[in-house]
Length: 379
Image (tube, rainbow, N blue to C red):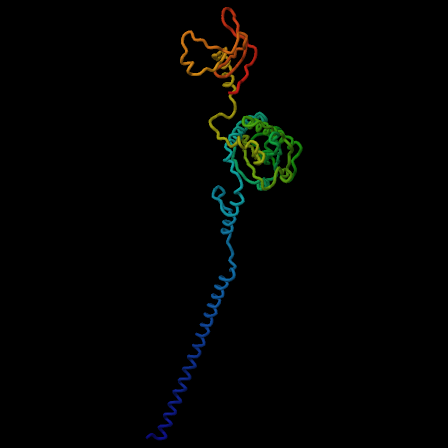
C-alpha cells in the first residue's frame, strides 16, 4: 500500500514528465514547421517543373534562337566561297544557272581582255593592263543593290539578239580616265570630290571609253556569232538603268583596268535572256586554239587548192546489164549504149557530176566542149 505522500510524488513526477514532453514537443514543432516550410517550397518548385513539362507537352515553350542558329536556318554563312549552301538561300538560288555550264563564254571574255588591253592603250596613250577578276552568276536585283555609288552605268543593246546589257564603271576608273585624257601628271592621286554630280566633260569621256569597250565586245563575240553592241544611254542612278526584272539571272564579269598607279574596275552584266539566242554555241566545249580565224593559213590553203590536180572522167553513156551477161563478155563482144554521137557527155570527178558538153576532136585528140553544169541526179 502506498500512502498519500507517495501518490503526490507520483502525480508530480507524471506532471513533470508531461511538461517535459510538451516542451520537447514544442521544440520539435518548430523544427517540423521549418521542415514543412522547406518541403512546401520544394513541392512548389516541383509543381512548377510539372507545369513547365505540361506546357512543353501541350503548348510550345518560348525558346529564343541565337544568331548562329538564325544564320544557319537562312543559309547565310561567313565563308562565301563554300559551295555547300543550305537553308532558304539554297532554295532561292537553286534556279540560277552557273556560268561554268557555258564554257565558251569564258573564252570570249579572255579574248575580250586581250583586245581591250590594246584598244585602251591606243585610247589613253598610256600603259594599260586589263585583267579578268571573276565571273559570277547572281540575280539582277542583288547586283543593282551591290553597286557602289557614285558610278556610271552604260546601257547597251545587242542588235541581233534584241536584248540589253549593262556596263558599270566605278568612280576610281572614271577619275583615272579623266585624269589621263586631260593630261594629268603621273604619280599623283586623282582628286575625288564626293557629293557632286558628274560633269558633262566627265560623262563624255567615259562614254567614249564605253564605245571602245563595246566595239571590242562585238569583235570578241564575232567568231562565235556576229553581234553588234550599240550604246544606248548613260545613267548614274541604278534605278534608271534597269534592263530586266529583279529576279532575273545575270552573268557578271568583273574587269580590272590598271594604268600604272591609277585604275579601277569595269563590270559587264549580261542577262541570261540576252545570251539565250547563242546558248547552244556557248555550251560547246573549247577544243584547242580554234577560236578565231588564221588568215595566213586560209590564204595558203586557197592557193594550194587552185594548183591541185584532179582526175575528170568523161561518161559517154551508161547501161544496166545482168551480171550473167557481164561474166560472159569476151573479146569482140559489143555493148549497146542508148546514145548517139550528138548526145551530151557528162564530166565527173569521182562520183560528183561537174559539167556536160559535146564530144569532138581537137588537134588529133578526143575532146569535150563544155556547154553547162551537169544536173545532179537523185539516186
